[in-house]
Length: 511
Image (cartoon, rainbow, N blue to C red):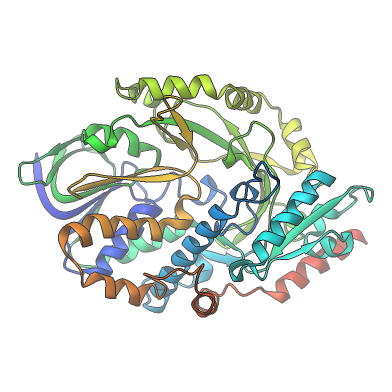
C-alpha cells in the first residue's frame, strides 16, 4: 500500500471538481492537489455532453424556476438567483479564456437562443405574466415576448411549421442564451491542471474508505481497478464531487453534518435527431411546461446541441427510475445507502410522492411512438424514424429531514461541509454545473478563507470574478459591464448570420 500526502483531494473528475481545482490553483499555485476518478476517463458521468441537456441555466427559458403563487403572481426569486449565479460562471470562464487556461470558447460554449413556448389560454396568460415580472428587471430586460405566429415562425420555424392556426400560442426569447458542453469544459480544465506543478490526476480509482485523523486531516483509501492495488492519500481537505456517488462517500465519512440525508435516483432519456435537413432548421433551446406530477427536471424542451463541433437536436427528458446512483453504477447503490438515520425521511418521501412514483412508472412504460407523440407538441411534423433514443446521466435528488413531514424531496443542489472545514460534499442536481463556480466559491469561503484565514484570497477572487462581493441583481451598472465583458469574451453575442441560415433552410424546406 502506497501513501501520498496532499493539501486537497478532489473526488470525481467532473465539472464540479475541476472547477474547484482551477479556483484553488489560481488562488495558490503551490497547493498540492490530487484528483481521483473511478472511471478511466475525465467527465464521463453527469458532465458528459450527452448525459445532460447542455443548457447554460440562466432562467431565461426554464419555467420551473418561476412558479406561480396561489394569488396568481409569479415568484421570480429563484430565477434572479440562478441568473446571477450563471453570470458568475461566465465571468470565471472568461477569465480563464483570457489567461489561455481554457481553449477557444467555441470548443465548450456556443450562443443558442433560449426560448419558452406554451400553448393554451391559461399557459399563455402565465407566460405573459412571467415576461412582465422578469423583463422589468435589467437582468432580463432583453427578453422578448410575442403571441404573433409570424414572429414565432422567425424565432423557431421547426416548432411553428404546420401548427394549427387556431392554437393560442406564445413565446419568450433571449438571443444570447448558451449551449454548454460541460464534459469538454471539465476535460479542458483537467488538461490545464495537468500542466501545473503539484497536481495529480488518478484515474480508475474507487474510494473504499475515509478516515478522519487526530490532526484533522483525512486518510482516503483507494483501490486501483486496473491493478487491484490499494493506495492511501492523506489530505488536509477533501471534496466529494462525485455526482450521484457523493452521497455514499459522504456517508462513509461519518461527519455529523451528513446524517439523515438520503438520495432518490432519477434516470433520463432523450430523443436525438442528427439529420442535417432537420437540424439546420432549428437554432434554439425551447422549453415548455412540465406535465402535472412530473419532477422539475422533466420540463420538456427541444434543444440545439453542439458536441464536438457537430449540431444535433435533442428532445426530452423522459424520466425513469433505477436504483443506480451513477450511469455506470450498481443496482445496489440505493439499498446500500439506507441508514438508520435516513430511513424515516426516505419512507416519508415515498409516502408523500405517490404522484411522482406513478409518473416515473408511466415514463418507463412509454413506447418510442408515444415519446415522439410528445415531441409533436414542439415539432408537429416529427417522424418516428428520424429520432433515436439516448440515455442521459443519473440524477440523485436530495432527501433530507423535515420537521413537519419527517422527510422532504428537493430538486436543487446543496453543499454539506464539516464544521472544521476539512471536508465538503455536493449533493443534488439542477441547475448543477451551470452554477458550479458560485457553488465552489462558497466552499472556498467556508473551508479555506473562513477556516484557514486566507483573507488575501478575496482580492484575488475579485480579479477573476469582477462582481464578487456585490449583487448583480441590485447593481444594474455592474451587471451591464459584466455582461458586456462575458458576452464578448465568450463570443456569445447572437449570430445573425447563423439565424439567417436557419431561416433559409426553412424556406428551402417549405419550397
